[in-house]
Amino acid sequence: MPETTDEIGYTLSIRPDPAIWLVGPLAHETATEWIETTLEAVAEDFGVAAGSAESTYLHSVLTSFATAELGSPFRLLRLRALADAPLVARLDVLAAGAADPLAEFGHGFAWYDHGPRTEVVEGDPSIRRATRLYVDDGVRAVVRLHRRLADDGPSLLLACAGFTLAATASGLDDLIHLTQCIEIKEMT
Image: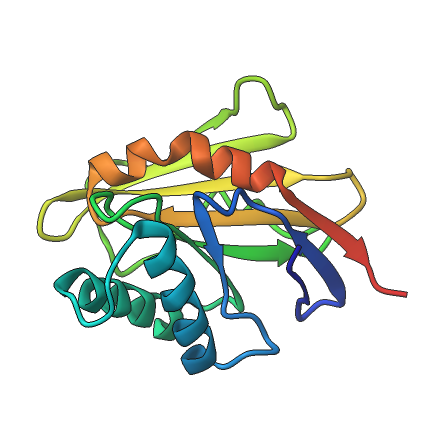
């Protein structure tokens, strides 16, 4: 169960399904260390031989993921099989009273739609989902999941933009479940 501390003084307990999600690298490990240990474990799980084309592909995916500037110290990679498009999610902890993170998606994108479509996740009223579409070598989707744990406490924001609309759409249930597997513990 990975635990790490964020910049506003909370410890996160991140317990995703290890058959679906990879967590890291976390604050206590370098990207290089994480890539080496993760590549070995994933290659073994997927039955990939060292030096093969599949091993090279995995190394490329893990390196891109571990070294990308996501703007958050918490990153997760959905990698269920070699044939699946990888899905990257970033996690942020928002202080109590923070502005609604689903209202504004920022500038610098060629948005395809007129604004975010926001809805409460069926079966879990603590999670709201917002989706936006943008154009970048095709139409892609950005999904944000906001989970309020208590009215007067911090909340979680999980953001994801898949390489394709299909990859993002196929990961929606996994993203919701991931959001439910993260706990915030206030530091003492």
